[in-house]
Length: 177
Image 1 (cartoon, rainbow, N blue to C red):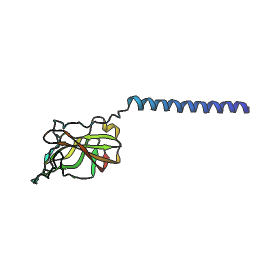
Image 2 (tube, helix red, strand yellow):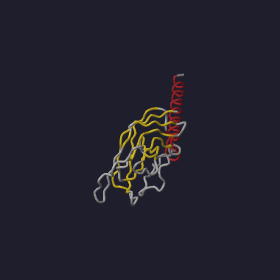
Image 3 (cartoon, one colour):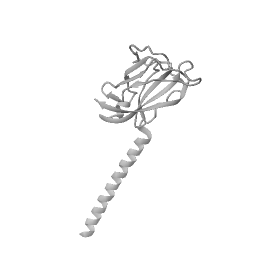
Image 4 (cartoon, rainbow, N blue to C red):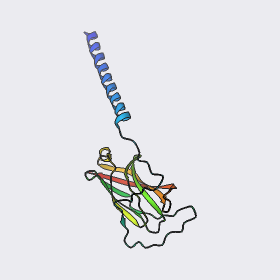
């Protein structure tokens, strides 16, 4: 009778280990083939499409910043708090490229190395307070608070060529439904 119990116990352990192995293989196959982890690439030249949600900054009549030859000068206005609404597939933020800047910008919002939002071209003198999520991002996020960052890409106004330097700004992203 003792041998029978050992045999039943051994079979139960083997079945449990087999079940865990099957689950591990399933997760691995999903992670390798079905999960969308491709980052959004930043263009080497400024996008032709300006940001659809950009609006002029009221009362922004500052003189352009001095710019060294071959370089650029920018000014930024932003809030470090961003709200993402999953039901509307949009983000609420404050980000401005004041008129005294002499560079165009593209803004990305990144959470855990995943670009969730990317703007069109944001020209000096314009601001954005709302942007749409990239396709499929709403399925990757859950309600909660995330550490994220603004990744600001700079482009020469006259040539559209991307600047060598980016700016990363730590932000807090609150996701709601």
